[in-house]
Image (tube, one colour):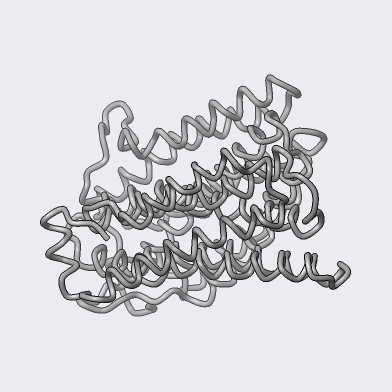
Length: 404
């Protein structure tokens, strides 16, 4: 919220027991990533080979990382203040350049991708450092640590953009690996050492809402693309079933994530005295497979809508089973982080999807899609019934190691 806060400069004013809302400027910024998610899924669709999958994975990790780092910074800074808003709008410009270069990032526009990414990461962190008052020593040191790590990776990103082929891929893998390792080692730098847990404290409800909104972005992108694809097809029985299966599958994913998990995560992190550590694990790292699963499922939906008949080929099998599988792995780990136990419903869903691999080649893309959708419905209903029957006992189950 905006308020007179001379000691905190551009930082949010945190009111005890009051959730900081996600601002309109942040929502506006997130719209860029609707486009980014679409670009990632379409790039995978058109380059569905082992090498193409590696390329898209690197690009996806970059997209997620630049977004989640921005979510952290806007959790601390106040987006209702003009300088922070200007930062967000400049980040939108960088995000659009980043997104438009995704399809050809390993071809002709690699340097543009690298410059956009490095500028966003380094520029945003430098702004955060300059916006931090000198008396907030722990926060300033944290910003310096992160700026050092991101400056080193920026060199690798830009160097990769200058070269081509396997050398570019190698440098970008090193760069993204460097950035993903950084929070795990608490951004250690000489003299300053490791960052403290206190320096990572966040407004938990805001962080949970921000990540939930990214899940909505990914699911919404899938629904929009499916609708656009279906509108161009002949409306026969196979295409209609494929479209309905895709929509119900998206609804099942929404239900699995939001019905209990998102609310429980927001409540826990809002009350946690160790909110920074929980945000790093549950929202920074464990949301990656959740988003990746939704994107992979979107690829499957488009493949099935366009080619529902015949035998399922490798890319249809990998995307149709792999999407829900990666999503469930992400959600079971996320819910374990916030509840302390593994969801039995999710575990059974993972086992059923793995078992489906044995029969997938004998099924048409349409019926393979229907089968995975049914599995996701089973998971959603099972969890809802198990936890809904006695919601007041969930905390007790978590403490005693029970499962749903």
